[in-house]
Length: 200
Image 1: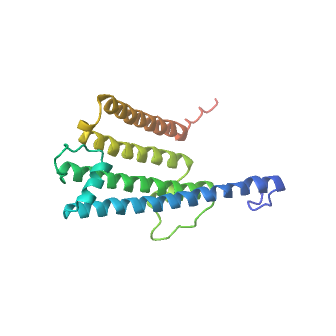
Image 2: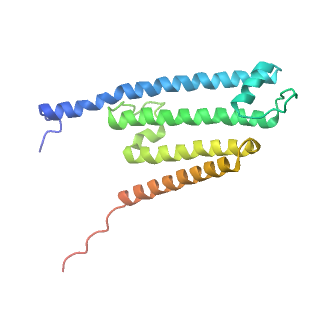
Image 3: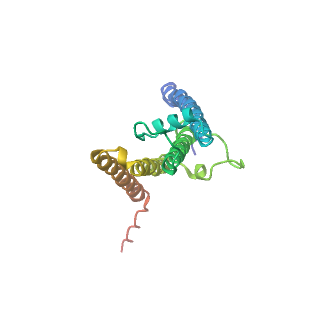
């Protein structure tokens, strides 16, 4: 029986070690995660300040949500504005979750084992993650993010043209069909082959 820890040849060792070139990419995603955390708190602080009457913060969130203010009328914190800001915060959280899946799942799958078995904080999905499972989970997460963007657009529909509304809807449907195709392909690839009939 071959030794599973047999020494690799020089070329095989170089090729196998090249997976560590992905490490700077995952570190970069961690930094992007930090930027999203900062952006989340900036938006949340603006919302809280606007709720207490800060006009500068209110103007900032109205601009960020793309709402139009009637000329000459003072900006107001409406339910629609609050809803758009909260949906924006949820959007940031979902993108952050997507980053975590890519960072942790990608590193575990393509770079090196993290040896998290038995750790109380080990993500449930990480125990059975592979390239195929990660692909399906990422597609599902992208659909969730697209849904939030589409909901924000529909809530603020008065500030968008019909062309933009139709385009975003078609993009979301494309994401949905792509995810269904990925899941169906994955299921076909993983389905067990039927046993061959016994020869008489």
